[in-house]
Length: 286
Image (cartoon, rainbow, N blue to C red):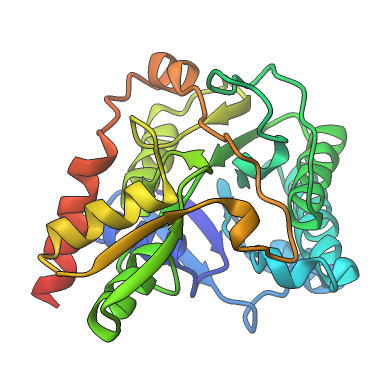
């Protein structure tokens, strides 16, 4: 039986993985939160890997507060870069395959077509820089890895754009949302299924991959789709990024090309609006 460690066990992606694999009997998943396993503690990681045998490690642990990271540079790099390096070294020592989750924010957003894995990274904020450094440290220290860059992740769990919009839609009559940042909303349960597929195939096609749901929209377009699907009546005003300044710059265009992961792992990728319907329906059941 394969044993799979999932770090960041309380986060939205880890919780989605838990939902997806709950009926998979042939694997044993161990979900470790930051109290069980602090990925910034090298000694604790090494001890944890010495005391437990794993076939895969899915690293969902990350510092994701994009704006806060601008003034919390050291913490972002300790978690997203140094933590990734510690895990990579522990995986190498024990022959564990690492599946590491990264971000579309490794790109500057200046491209006008979807970003491929071979495109040069160029970060414009601290969060993106810390995640890119994590990727680089994994690649320098480990050969058996899958780095999956994803974008605009949302789910029924944690704090994310979907849940924020649903809350604001019930609190406000009018809302301004940025319309000149373009990307692909991605349902975290779809990403969880992709991760499971990679494990199931026992593939050794290691490297960097992009995964997001199909299609693209703006944050305003995403919000509009949420309100329409949830049947929330609210006046939505599209605004420019300049009218809503944030501490961290965002890439104006961060659509990811998913052709590689689709072809290598024979994955049929869902359209983002179809995934959104599933997520809202699931939320309504709870």
